[in-house]
Image (cartoon, rainbow, N blue to C red; front, side):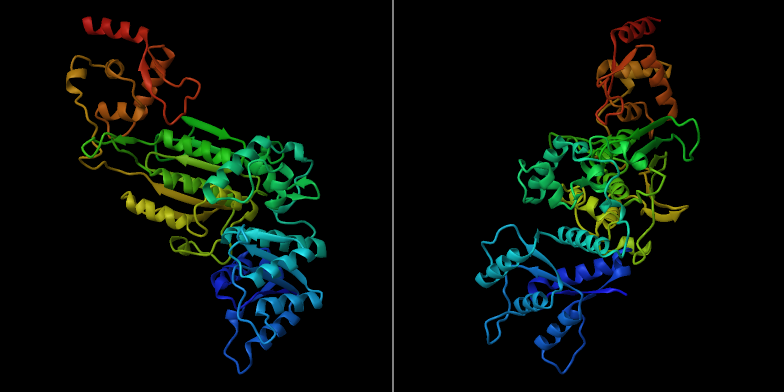
Length: 501
């Protein structure tokens, strides 16, 4: 048997919120098994008074979900709005009441709505929200808690389940403070930077009876992989178009979901070709990568946020000569199809309690638009359209790299003839270019006349590094996207000898 949820009410203020919340509950793999939703918009035309209908629906429902905003609503002869009467009736009948108040400030509320908000606050715990993802996450946590409390499920969804053996001391206060600063700057988040750690976790539904849940550990844990070994992200770079060993560059990134997204995105961007244009339109030369950074970041965020964390597999990111592939353990929600990903669709995060903090810090920009943004940004960059597919328990995204460089903006401003004319070997030509300036590998490749960074170039650079003829400009971060090569004193002497020959 399913629980029936009555979502209030006929206020125009919440027309879109009611529909989005209904679609979210009906689309979530867990919630749809236990809940059905009534909203006023779903009623067919009927020869009955509206107030009679919705009060009858309250009586027949198991849960009353109240959305309280600024408007009070149309008043009856007693001076009460539909929302007010629904709340009073659900209280009288002993219904489970879940109240969500929109906005952090009460300054703009109708006086009677403010009184109703205060009345509800005297009787139960209310939750405040600002945007749809906040509401979805809060409702998700409350409904899961109801299922656990009623015994309908014995263990909750992964993100809402208490992390075994984890304590509050396993949460990093520094990471909580960083999150609060980012969330306030990005989304005007309600909590201040000085809010105690337990209060922050409580506000985000990341704590249960004093114990952090899995989402809390993944978002703010000191060492998340101590509890969740396979939550790491594996990044690989291949010079060809096939997955062959030995892997030229292989990194495993650990840490919080924020750490893993940042590190994985930096890895990919550091391996992509970078094209520097002319300064004809301003003092700053434009920089273009063969896959836009927005596409890389969005693909990685989606994989980390929505993956199946109960799987023994990890997220795998593979960069090939012609494409980027992001493999995410899991599948699509039943209500979504591969075809629907290129269009605006309802947001159905696999881990809502993880998705909300990512949204609050703008790692996720809009609910339901992530895959659409990937398509749009690939079109703008002139790339082939990305491909989504399901394969062997993974959800896979393929993004194609740019094959050609346009003119004139992306042509580097240099002439190599005078610099390289006297040098024959690739080693000597590299050293000659680095004599002029410190350069990243992408610019070195272009000045050597290559269309893209070749495997041979990487091999030669590795040898020059080992021979101490060149060195990194950022030696402690060899994979930094800002990394450049420069000539050493030993390299300068070597180049002089070769020039004299």
